[in-house]
Image 1 (cartoon, helix red, strand yellow):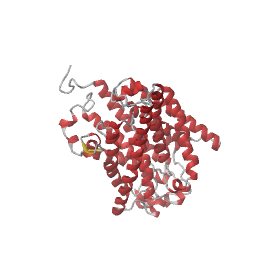
Image 2 (cartoon, one colour; image 1 turned 135 degrees about the horizontal axis):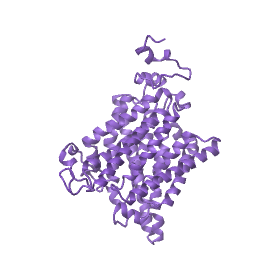
Image 3 (cartoon, one colour; image 1 turned 45 degrees about the vertical axis):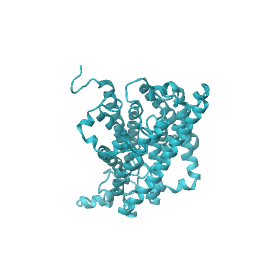
Image 4 (cartoon, one colour; image 1 turned 180 degrees about the vertical axis):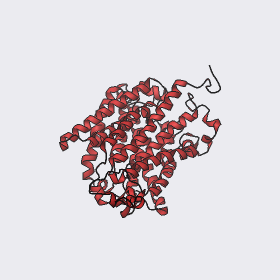
Length: 454
């Protein structure tokens, strides 16, 4: 029975799932906080984790003030970005039907927030170990405002020009992963590299903690891709299954390649393979059949592995840019791969479940089979157009943002700060247990706050 708190238009099942999916995606960002805290040198554990945590919190504020409306509101300029306003602050807007009509706008705003937040958290992965925290505090709202909102509106909003043109991005292969990979790589170029000692040797301080974070990231992806249909339906179920299958396959392929090349099964390598599988399936999760997800897992475990382990060492420019956690390979390359494979494998009936009865969305292999080769080639062309748009957008906007911030505050920490790490940047240390030749007496933190300890 309808009540004031549960009007007739509210679908309680769909609303419950979207809130649950949102929570899963939020936990992914917390998983990255844990990964970043464990996968870096001990002296950078706090700074790395805190960069991610700050991005998550700050994004919510600016997303509420104007980010959501710029991403999903009324067009402001050429169907590229929405008009900023403060409607999210009003009760009337938040309790009204969302644009899918199954739950209140508050649910939609929160669901899209966690996607925006994790994009900024991913960018941080390319900048760990040397970015000035003040610069990062400025970077987050600027990049969210001038880059993320443009990509989200153009590709995801029903009013966006690339959405209307037919670009397929089921859950963020372009909007989130390609964007974060290119933006992170570009920002890493402008910030500059870590000190030589850190670049040459950057061992994880806690691999078990890294695995805990990786587990949250993997399981949380069920909400990432399973929430994309905005409803509890059969496409959501398929998206979740395809996500896990592609990821497991990618992890095993990466593991085997590591074994063959290096002679040892690498835990960090397995995590990288897991991430590339998750990223690759994202733009296609609910649009492809299970067999296609399996193939995508094989490709996502091998192509990014090749670009990271082989090409990266041969291309001078890639070696020059210090992308700390190889976000370019795990997100830009894997996201591009997934977007192209979506254009190849997207099945017409599944497209109809997600996009509605619109014949322009069709994978190339099915287009050829059904005598619509031109439509399939057009779809591949649109996928390439989406990739090109996100690439150019993020190179240009990220560069401008970094150059503007550089006028206000240094992008990079001083050599002294980079040599010491957390202790000088935050006045805190991750662990009380010391190693690698370090002693508590040598700690700035220990001397300043606990002078009686000798």
